[in-house]
Length: 530
Image 1 (tube, rainbow, N blue to C red):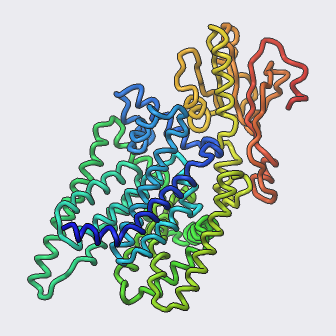
Image 2 (image 1 turned 90 degrees about the vertical axis):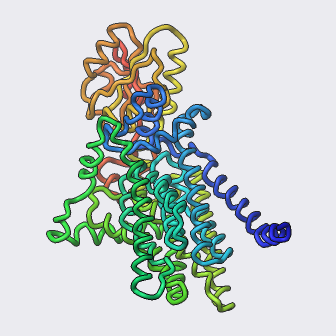
């Protein structure tokens, strides 16, 4: 027994050390300057939901009111208890999920290819890929979905290969976690039977029929557990909204025969452009080599991995009404495994070439990550991501500073503070409420968009003696602050829009968050400040 333990330790000690170093590398990339990108619209909503759910247990299914599954918000709640910054608490949840995905990539790679080198390289690709680093640093559900996806695949493959009930149950729990996270988990349910190809099929019709019956029974258990967990959502009062809200994001099935090329072709191109930019693109070359190298010996593994990577992208490109880079995050682990399998090549000469290609990937990824972690406005993000996270109203530049100012003002006196914000949902007011966290002396209210006059609710608040403020993006403020009696406290500029983009041409070079105080008399110096 001791001899076997010693052999195991000798065999795996270097892998364990390298794996540990890789985990520290991944954590470092995901933790460093975690707040350098401000709160994003959906982050504000999710973290605010988690705060409300923590404060009021009867609202634990609050996300269902917008047709969203609540598991991510449930997992944020414990972090809110130990991390003072609510945005960091939400992002910590995604970081832990990202590490879980990386471990799953290692496990699945080793199980398929029985190569420590391939498993380590696959983990490295995920650990440093700017695509993974960027979204693992955001308080969004996509990293958690990716983690459940890779583990659903892994346990399903083990179930098919071993015909063990415990692995079938673990498959069900992973699938259930995915279904409680986000609706695209449906792809995992659909693709689950593809893992049956890894079963050791016996010869003879009777034996094959018995084997098939076992597989059907085991995967029935997986589906039973997975959808049993999903049906916990029926305890919430708005379960029906999950299905109805999904329809807002997808085109009807009839689109397939009425206009199949639009937006399919453009979105497929866009998907691979995202990977080319944030993958970075070297990973696509490695994946092509991996397919070629393993087309015979590991044909089944490559085909199924490619299906789990490509099928969701193809379907979403055909039917998606809304499509951004984070919608393909859950497919990336399978791409990285295919890319790492290129190191199964036996030729010493071509192995050296692949090492050189890997070094190029590492160099490209680290250069991108350096900008992402120190100066994200200079990082070569795809335009949609740059616009959403750094430039437009969805980007939360200035929200934390406004919250800090308001909390400081509240600490100076007993007066109640009322803050009006543009919109009713999203970056504002949820981002502000997230940082203020329901202080009873501070009220945040949405007052609509395209403000031309001071809303009556803010006028009444000012006249009642409350300190009253207005927070709004400059593109949505249509009034004259001097005439309206608004005192500009500060303006918080967002990232410069890139010249030549549609946003630059239609909205100007830069968006700013304006922070006004509603005063009794107009100030003559306001126009100069603006």
